[in-house]
Image 1 (tube, rainbow, N blue to C red):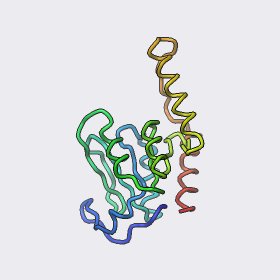
Image 2: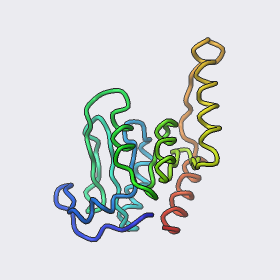
Image 3: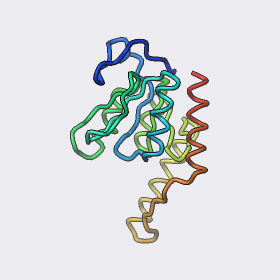
Image 4: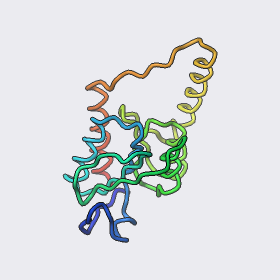
Length: 168
């Protein structure tokens, strides 16, 4: 459930009440800038708390609704932090399918930066496809290539985000 932060933030520190209402998590290590900007604008416009987790000191705009957490450098450190702290009905923005699986298992919502919503109904199929593609890449049958976000994908993400915030 997306809740709204009630108190002012001073230098990125939240009150105990706000920490209890953290609800949009950003997997900041791989989140495209265009998507982060959409999330930051939504946080301020909708007065929704956002927390970005990354293994580097990510830039965030000054806002009483946006906070960052820097985790240790290491494989999946940001993912592990999010998986540990996410609560049911929180929203997690991630392209990492295993993290999306962990989020869905905790009854939270996972949204890919390309606008794909991961649910209990589709995450198993998405995980299977990921494993198959990983095997094909390792065998050299396909090459790994990630395209830049298209305007259509950015719009799809923005539309999903708006609907998710409105229904909370």
